[in-house]
Image 1 (cartoon, rainbow, N blue to C red):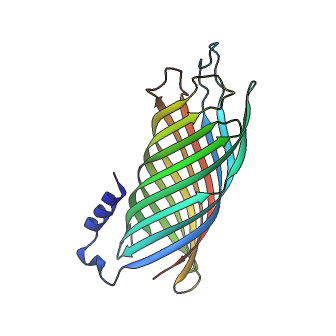
Image 2 (cartoon, rainbow, N blue to C red):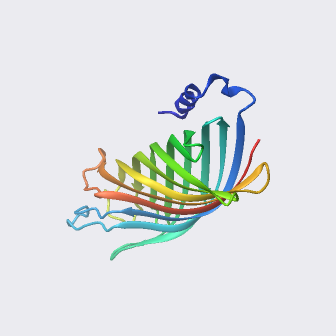
Length: 259
């Protein structure tokens, strides 16, 4: 479903007078650190002699920077966010191959939600997409994209009138697309243009505090762990990996302003 359809749904769910002066806008920006792992299972029997092409693992600690905007009316809200990472290095090595990689990560999400239980909890639905790109010094080009819908909830507690501590969890149904173009030193035929899917959980913990009447801050810890199974590639007859796994542990601090 395209992003504009989500916006239309949000408009239908909100009261008609939500476009009046009671709408609040809260832009925010953040910095963070993300421990990222991309793990591609071995390709069993993929080499010409019948042996396995080894596991591919890219692991890096990214510096993240992002921006977001939340629009609120009464109990309803719409949220958009985008973040990008620094470019970091890792290496791939096996008995026969060694290559240095430079990679980066981008993420976008849109969500609409509603506050419940005396504003201590939220329920929400949304759409997210992410892309990890890596380029090797021997010519390998790798990209992995995932996109799909999620549904989630959060619950929190006011602590000593100084801030709000919340836990959250979301269930996502994602499609993945892996594209690999190996460098010239690798055996021929290892190219991949494969599709896959997953259903999994993300979860996290956050603390939100007040700086002034209009300014606030938040500190958040989030975990995303998705394993993509059942890869298909109609352009290749060479065995594919059994699965691909992406794991992200992210810590960030954000500043927001309410209009």
